[in-house]
Image (tube, rainbow, N blue to C red; front, side, top):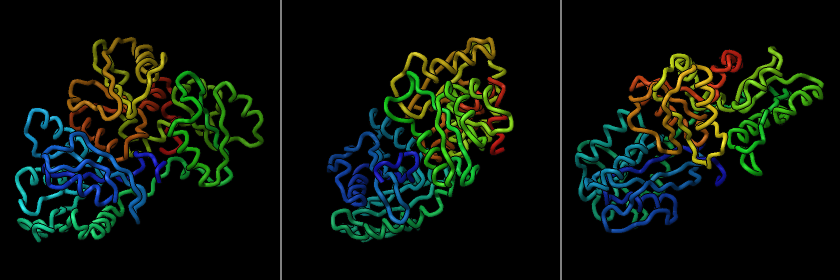
Length: 391
């Protein structure tokens, strides 16, 4: 459970006013002192993440947020962070102080849940002080973090409302069968993490093994020799997007070719739109603003793909000199309207909902958003081939 990536976990957000008992509820549900609890309002400043196994769902991550009613100057920044958590929330828990009841900030949250189609439960906390299970026609579950009353029942309700949230999605195993050979091209260069593979590579290998496929891993310079030693041709070649051109030249047209980044876009549910948006690259002019966004944070190398290689390929492809903005991790700009194009990584560190939310926000602001692998293959003239295995 502990090694399940956060992007593969169901995200359960805990929202509400200051001192409603959000942090106490997180501790009660997880059975651990995951969050600091105090009678002082505003104890929780930044979102607190806690991973656990919630049966029968499996691995989940709870997110404790700052109080939505903090109207101080610093508090407004905390509230904005809490609202951004909704972009990645699969199920929301709205914690209400049973003694005080609902107010406008609670109603605002309910409207936000419904506007964003987030499933939610209303949790009336402090049942040891007030026996309430409904306010203004809004029914919920009454609990006490002090006595533990109904905490087990709350876990069961969370499990019930969460069922069906994560459909059966596969990275690659639906494209191959037992006995098929899959060649994975993984460069080991200055940008490769020392002593390990990156997450998408690990996940693709595991998914292929689960269906009984045969995985062959090679570096780009070893590819020709690898093919020469194979008795049967591979069903599919999956490559790091950075070496698309080199790999494409060596792979016969009758063998499927794609990249880890493109598979991840499909897995996160943003592939079709990303393909359509890639053609915007051809229209880039001098001074156009491009956002290049990565879902994780890492030490930048001298030839980093996001900050160096993709800008270089864009300029070679278009002959233009655009202006670039770079973001990483949860730092995704709130105002996207200034950009001509967004190029996003595969999103292995984001859950499906967050990636779709980012794409939806971009669409609302009429800003096209594509993907690293899709953008690179488009600029190298092989996009149609690279999405053919599943289009």
